[in-house]
Length: 120
Image (cartoon, rainbow, N blue to C red; front, side):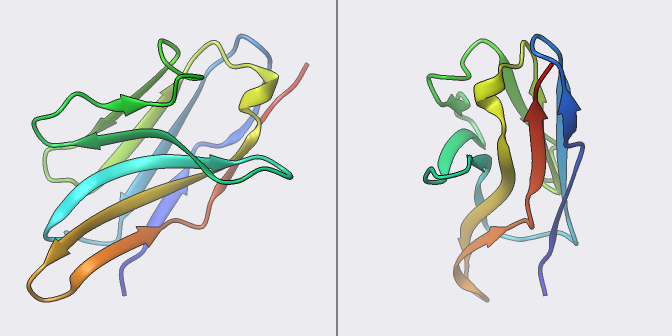
């Protein structure tokens, strides 16, 4: 059973920083994208940042220049450095991994979510 375990959420002041991390329960073969999504109250889940081998990471327009996604070479951990936080960044943040393997077929795994609250 694959698990994605997130950490690093919490409360930050506007202009502050937080770093989210997501670790897989083991090596997952066939990963395509690793990424972060978020869902604010009353809103749909949206992509925040995604990273894929040999490509420039993708970011939502609302976080460009403020957030940075990174992953380890073994693709067992993906992190999101969030700087210059704004109240509108308040949401539950979810780690996501998708891909394909001959053993599992197409897969799309989600973490349990971690709350990020930006408030003074």
